[in-house]
Image (cartoon, rainbow, N blue to C red; front, side, top):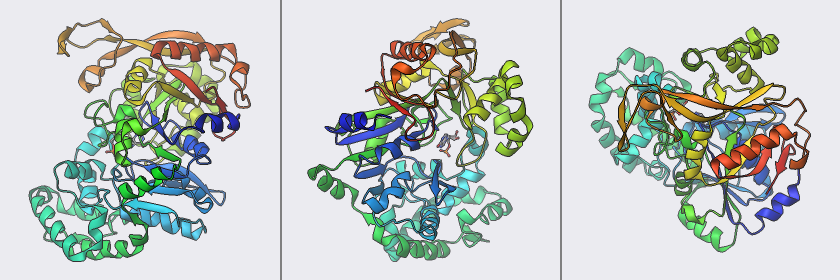
Length: 501
Ligand code: IMP
């Protein structure tokens, strides 16, 4: 990789962001790792423990959910921050700190915004018990209920756990407002869910009220002791960092098509995962960001959880199959040896082959990710919010395929419906993205076909050396979206990166 080109390119930049233009899981972790050598400060600003990234600690893979992957660079003085927009789950952060301590990884430069909304056991309980979990396919990490409380001004914040008396009184008030919701829960099921280690292993359960305020206060006061030294006033900290001309890297979570503002309705996460949401969650303005690495996986894409995905291989069959709890191990054992056969079979089987080839299983839930061809209509839409600079990842995954398909339009197959000032007619072709899930579920992909390639891409380190078939695809994507592809990842390693900037 031409690291020096990247460093030169970043030389006049001070704030750089990494965001995803799809439904998440596009390889942000690798880019953040790559950019850690440039950054002095790495901040997460959105999402919570619904995200997951694999960190190699002493040659062993661990999945982290909240502590940024840049923590491995802590001993070099890199500052990692959990920003004000992060759904802060103290239990998960402490578990991750324990793991890092066991492995002698330094965390002395980790910081936590005092203003981050605080995850409480009832958020996790409500997320896991509500039927939204099944309908949306949430990760069960309390994200929706916590951000809902934030918007309705019913949220506690990290800062609150440091004053026991105040914490208790706020908690009592907020729980009183939830009395009706809690009263409707099935007590036995709630008790069972509260036995989960992430929900206190049973200590928070109260026979009468479902949740015991005293036990929550006691436990969160213990958390406070452990976390005290990490907490900062992020806004003041950043004022100083900007004055000192520090290099700041903003690490996005999830992706634009899952954003609460712009994502496919109902099947969204609860924070704004676009650039604007990320900047805000980091305590910055969007216009302060000097450059955005807007990632898209190519030449396929994935989605975890439910919701429309027009170019999904195997359509509804795949969505139902992926929602019904097949494990990675089971799928690997059953299908891996038959990869070439799968690729030649029906769409659903091809989807399984893509999953195995790209190792597409959820980091947080282990669920198989739904797979399909790259949808350029959706990509162009997402780039409206994340900007025109694209980074393509995983382009080596589909090596060996005879044909590559890109979705360039949709055919609307639903009943006539009023949408955005006009009527969509059955069988009408549409060249723009419709985030309304009820409509998008009726959009069938229209593809343009391209030749595949057989050459190994994983050792190529400059754009010109890529096979012509790949370059044709790259140029087509640029022309279609009006964007510019600046970086291409040809494998999981830092070195396996082509810089085109
Ligand atoms: P929640 O964020 O747990 O509420 O889940 C809402 C939707 O976002 C579900 O479809 C999840 O599968 C999806 N989701 C949440 N986090 C991620 C992620 O990190 N990658 C991909 N999908 C995610």
